[in-house]
Image (cartoon, rainbow, N blue to C red; front, top):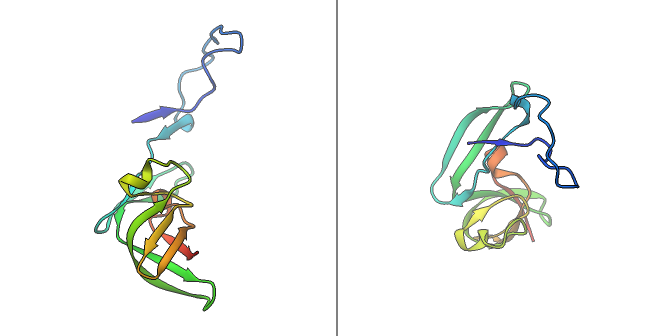
Length: 126
């Protein structure tokens, strides 16, 4: 699904802008990747502007959790989503985005990575 991210079609007065050019590839957006809790599944190799590649994480049940006291990373199992500042309805569906508070077997942690674009979940214990 291609999303158009150009300016609004209407002026402040309500009049319509005349189209200056057709839709361009660089204004195209994509629908969000809603990362859920389940066994691992990643969609590898989405080419983006500049030729870079993004790894989209569709499902996962583990996270790299950083403990600020011991200053070490450990792999933790994700149990559920506790809070999501991006969208309150994501909590019921267990959808993870950046800033989400997740409940792990090590304790509650805040997601610091963007799983839909980085392909991994990094979190810090709260």
